[in-house]
Amino acid sequence: AQTVTQSQPEMSVQEAETVTLSCTYDTSESNYYLFWYKQPPSRQMILVIRQEAYKQQNATENRFSVNFQKAAKSFSLKISDSQLGDTAMYFCAFMKGGSEKLVFGKGTKLTVNP
Amino acid sequence: SAVISQKPSRDICQRGTSLTIQCQVDSQVTMMFWYRQQPGQSLTLIATANQGSEATYESGFVIDKFPISRPNLTFSTLTVSNMSPEDSSIYLCSVLRGKTEAFFGQGTRLTVV
Image 1 (cartoon, rainbow over the protein chains, first blue to last red):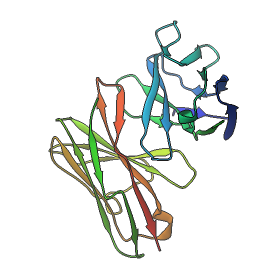
Image 2 (cartoon, one colour):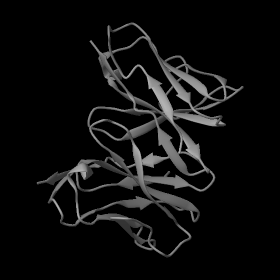
Image 3 (cartoon, one colour):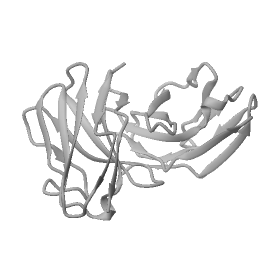
Image 4 (tube, rainbow over the protein chains, first blue to last red):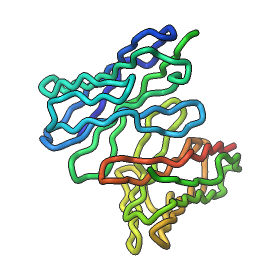
């Protein structure tokens, strides 16, 4: 079975600064996908970024980028130029290729301070 | 993207009663997923609902406790039966676009007293 571990229950960052959220996973699969989801206080889960395991290039979406280290099974999220609206729970998630089921980590509560 | 309407958004229920949560999607999807998010915890998949067949439940979840209906390709319901305070959670429905991109409803916050 796959597991996803987020070792930082809470983090905080000053507005406009950069923060990195950690995620490690365990799997024996070779075909899989990794995701970061954001859940603001409104509870709406929003996809932040996605990485295909077979792609060596790290995914980037505007201020959000990942550091995907496949051998180390590490998938960290970097948020640049943090904004107050980035305050949310962030969940790292894993999907085996062809499975369509997501396995989530426990989440990291990020607070962006003005 | 996908627009998912989930209701109720919240409810407070007496123990021993049941609550049915509805999930409506703006377009047809093959599978719909139901997740539970216990207080301060992550999301755990309850079951996968296919149209025209029985739902597939994950380990630790049973049909008698969480019956699911899937009458058509845009709608599903999850019932939480014979509720106890331990069932107090957020329940979310989800669909996939393009096989890997998941979209979620806004969730139902259930409190059992």
